[in-house]
Every structure is written in structure tokens, then in C-alpha cells.
Image 1 (cartoon, rainbow, N blue to C red):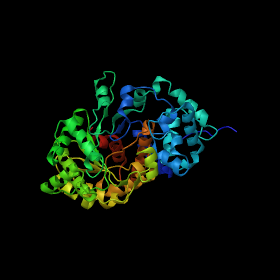
Image 2 (cartoon, one colour):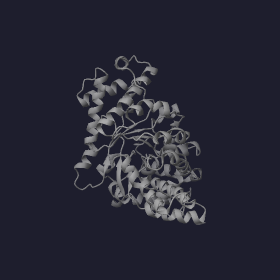
Image 3 (cartoon, helix red, strand yellow):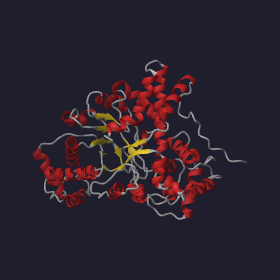
Image 4 (cartoon, helix red, strand yellow):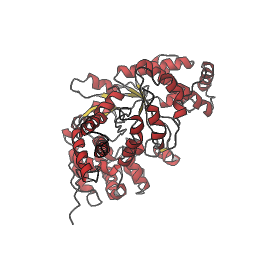
Length: 473
């Protein structure tokens, strides 16, 4: 029997109603091939600086995608080790092929998920695969992709151009020397834009066991003697400026809650010295961290870096998996979060300050209409982050638009964020957002709530104008 063809439908994710679908088609055509603006992601800058060929299909497409790892682990019963986890594991050809077979053998567990959409788009549009993944077609697909990866047009820089990426951000440790970014900036043959992002989470968690070592590293790279709280703020200022000088436009923060309550100067100093001594308690560590986050906003007002916040994720929920494979393998789980009271101290001080941009993301969908949209509807500097991570799928994106638009409009949202390490999935992820936004706007036109010319302008804004404006790109 012949393999089932892989033929993604041209109207996927567009409305079922024929009249509304025609409107959505016209809107989607306007932005289908628009440049990609990716202001938050995890693709290593080294890939583009080195421009070395990708080694194999599994290391490129499967292992870095923790969405897929989760699905195959939970629904397919696949051991993460058989998928090449953790990222960076050297795989023999046999191991790489075996992992890819696991994906194809378990293809049905991806049905109805965004992972299926992304892989179908990657296989069909990037690697010209024309058969549906299955146990029978696994080797055929693997060989086709492996053959592509031997060609120059599948090197990282060629794919960056082919994907029509206008700008892309990485995520970087505050003490990183940013070597890869500097090499790209100095390379006359490179005309893309890849910017670093300042990610200081662990440096702002003073009760964690690693904090003192990280603080010593921070002191070393800034040449600031961190013997008190003010010195720590100064060291942060120095590194933020270093990142900005190397092209950064934003900082990124993820903690257990969204708290920004300030302490008195004396209390902050007392707790900071306890942290330096290694005697601070977890509750006091949380209190000091919230104070530190508030000061990151103050620094953002001064240096102009956009501040993004995505709290409320239980990291490494499965301790056995964390001990075996480490972090970022798919074992994180979101939980409920409160924003209105938590952000009030920060927003009261800086929410309407000139040039301050705060983009707040959540995986708790209940917060969109209850808190984030009303907050963004008042504070000039607050923007509601698009659905990402666990909720960057078609239905959640549609719920987001329906929850937020009435309170905050389109102008107070961030534009799509792909937030991925899976480089070849970036076009597919942005395509999902463009299709769903086209469907949402089409419904407004069909209901005579929006004129067609307004919808055409808005779909361009959501795709290009908003992310560049919000992230100062």
C-alpha cells in the first residue's frame, strides 16, 4: 500500500464558514510571507556565528523541542534518553535514526496538537517531505532530511534568510561575554539581526544555593565589589549596559510569582547581607527578590531596555527526570498567578514613565481578561504578552484575542512570540498566529464590527508593527 500523502491544507485554521473564510484568506495573504520578527527565543547565536552544517535530523528537529519530548514521554511512553535528551548529547547515526523512528511511530499521539501542525509544516515546507510520518515512512523521511542537511542551503545562515527572519533575539546569562553576537556584528558577510536578551533570574533569587557563586561571578565580570545591596544594583546596571551596547533590546524575568513589593532601604540591606552570608531564609529571599525586580524596572526606565515578565511556572516538576536529564526537557508545569496586587508597586512607580515598556506573559489564561487586559488598558507602559509556551496553540490564541481585545485593543498586545529552541519550527509557529489572527479579524469584519480596510491594516500591525514597537526593534 502506498504511503499516505502529507499535504497540509491551504485553509488550515481558517474559519469553516465560507463567507468568513474568504475574508480570512484575503487577510492572511497580506501577511503570509511577511518577515518574521522574533523578539524572544532560545536559538543559540553560535549556530549563526559558526554557520556549521546541522549534524542530523534528530538533533535539529526533535531533541530541542520540549513540546514534542513531553508528548512522546507522556502519551507515547518513550524514554527521553531515546530522543537524544538532553540537548547537546552526541548521537550516533543509529541513535539519531532510532529517535526519529520513535517520533514517526507515535505520530498519532500528536493529533490535534500544535506540534502536529509545526512538524507537518517543517517537513513539507522546509524539507519537501510528501509522505505522512509513520513507522513505515520513518526511514524515508529521515534520509530525505539528512540529505538536505548536507547541502549549503540548509546551513543556519541560509535557513535564516530562507525563513525571512528580520530580527531574532536569543536568551543569555548576565555574565556571558556574548562572543557569538560580537562575531556576528563584526562579520561583513552577515546582514541579519540577532540580539541578546539579558536573563538575570538566578542572580535575583538570593535564597538559592547557587546565588553566592553567581554573585561572585557578577562581581568579577563587572569589577564591582558586591559588598552590599547598592553595589549589586550597580553591577546589574553595568551588565545591562554591556548587553545594550551589544544590541540587546530587552531583559527577561521568570519567577514563582509576579511580586514587586519594595522593602525599606535598611531592610533590603539587612537581607542582602544575610544572603551574602548564606543565612537568608526562603521567605526572606522571596521578599528581597521582589524588591530586586522592582529595581530592575527602575533600571529599565534609565537604560530603555524592555522588561518582560513570565511568572508562575513550577520548574522541573518531575524531580526524577530533573536529576537524570537536567532542566528544560519538558518537565515544567504552570500554576495560577495573581497580577493586580503583585504588580501595583512597580506600575505605581513606573507604569506611566516615559519609555518604560513592560510585557507580561502568562500561562494562566484566566488572568488575561480579569487582570492583564484591564491593567494594560490603563498603564501606558504595560503590554499583554501573546500566548506562549503551553498556550501558543490555535484555540488558546483565539481565546486570547477574545479575552483581551475588548479591554485593551490590539495596540496594547505584544505580537507573537515563538519562544523556541527548535529553529526550523519558527516559520510554522508564526504561521499559526497569522492564520488565527486572520480568522479573528475576519469574524469582526463578517459581524460588521470592523471595516475591511481596518482589518487589513490591523493584521499587518499584529504581524510586524506591534512586535517592533513594543520591543523597540
